[in-house]
Each structure stands twice: as structure tokens, then as C-alpha cells.
Image (cartoon, rainbow, N blue to C red; front, side, top):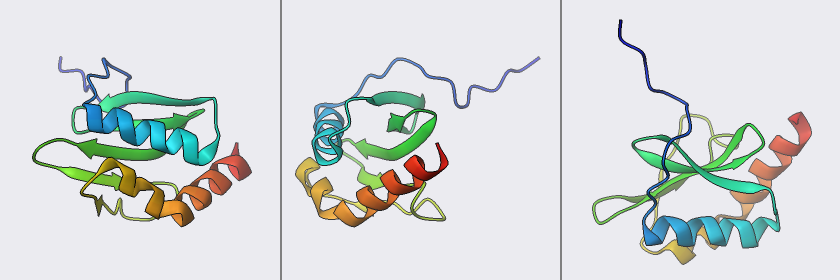
Amino acid sequence: MIISNYGQERSINATDGEIKIFETLTAATGLNDLRMVRKSDSYVSAVLGDWDFARFKYTDRAKWIMFPTAEAGSRKHKIAHPDEVTSFSDLIAESLAIIQKYS
């Protein structure tokens, strides 16, 4: 029997850039209950309750962020530096509004 390993939280093992992105999201939202988790080998998530507020990856080979609650189709926004996350203030606000509305 093969058991799928999808959606469970696992060891975070975040890069310095991913930690910086999470800190930037926390500062931008003012949320104390935002958590950084890894549910996938492919990215790290900023989670609010049961919702993935943002998903992001920041390694030597890949640098992106996505807002799955605010955008259909899992659109990856390429970034060059973790501080660029603040340029997505409209998506941050929209994601937060959707999560608060349905939580």
C-alpha cells in the first residue's frame, strides 16, 4: 500500500529568503497568528487558520510567491528579492479579506 504524502505539515527547512518573505508578510498583515509551514516539498506556506494565505519559494533556482485564495490558477509571481513581497499589497489585502470572510 502506498500512502500519499500531500497536505501534511512537515519539517520546515526554510531558506533565509523564505524566512524573510514570511517576516515581510507578517509585518504587512499585522497578524500574530500567521504561521510558516511546509505542506509540500516544492514550497513553504504562510498559513492563517486552515487557509494557505500565501505560498512561496526562494532558492538559488526559483524565486516566486503566489496567493491561492485571491487568484485562480495558482499564478506564480516571480521576485528577485524577498522585500519585493510588499509590492503585492493588493493581493495581500484581498487574500486576507477572503480568509476573514469565510473563516
